[in-house]
Image (tube, rainbow, N blue to C red; front, top):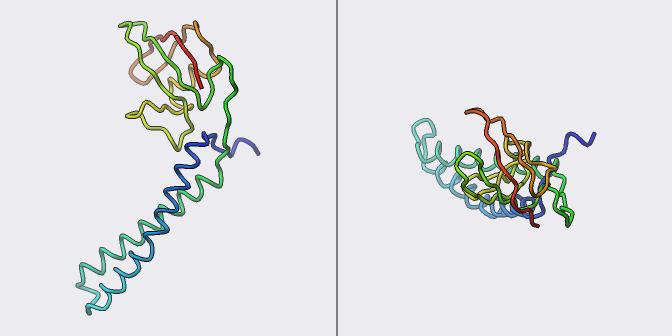
Length: 155
């Protein structure tokens, strides 16, 4: 039964919960907009009504999606050791050009490549998981294989 849960960090869980609360706070405003647009008259040619209805549906859909994300989330607290796992910062050296980059290994719902948060199911995440400082790891990515050396692992 454990395989149905998505591993997330506490920060990721809190972020999803905060988004749910923000959406719930905006729900009454969306309902008021829908009611105001409905009062304008003929619904068949009422663009405001259609837009307000679409916005409310989008909000409700997002709430359902995020609710499921929380329901199936398993918050993981990383151990204080040098083994790479969810919730840890990792400094990698790319062997092809010797460049270095720092990533945080996170759960799927909280992945954000722009913020250097990589999912544990991404090619690089899967490859470095359970490795430690000094290991050289091969990564099979869609654009070809490459190697990285793990320079540092921190909480």
